[in-house]
Image 1 (tube, one colour):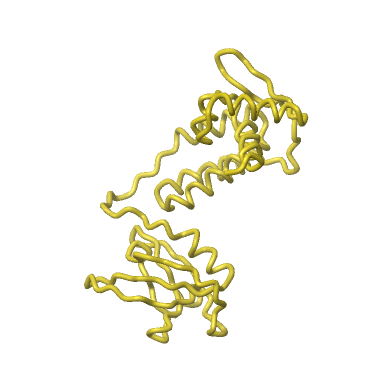
Image 2 (spheres, rainbow, N blue to C red):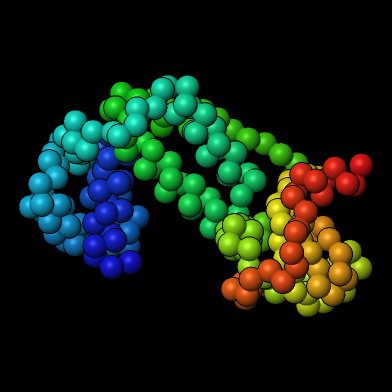
Length: 226
């Protein structure tokens, strides 16, 4: 992460919390305490009103960067709930994206509401059946391929532990039986197939556009199964 990106990220962190310690910033961005002080000084020099309270840490003066959109308490709570759900149902990369998005959302909340959001987040726990499988870290790449309509090349292990290489055109993701499933047109089979994401051992976005025209909508595909 270059310094400009780090300063922007640090600003978002400061806005999303009541108080932030120098140690927290150093650990989060893997920089020295001295660098933290330099970065905080740089933010102050460009007009960011950073204050310090002994025993608590740094904060941004309330009212700086007035929110372009005001969220209701119910809307903020709903977003916190989605973030909590992601802890159980998303992979590592997606969780990070959701965490960053939640911090940006918290940044536009009033100080009192930030505290409420943090408190609610600590009071929501999601439990699901234990599993020995670690979620594959492919959800972000799959989502990008779906939205950009680009072909994926995967190495897939079926229920018989047989591995094969496939070129697929993904049309959607669905979650059932406690795991993510990728629905895609399989070139090898010339048909739509349901791939368990946890059985994908390797995934590459070829950046090649779909070759098949008029794909099923994911909802139409699911209806066709009934």
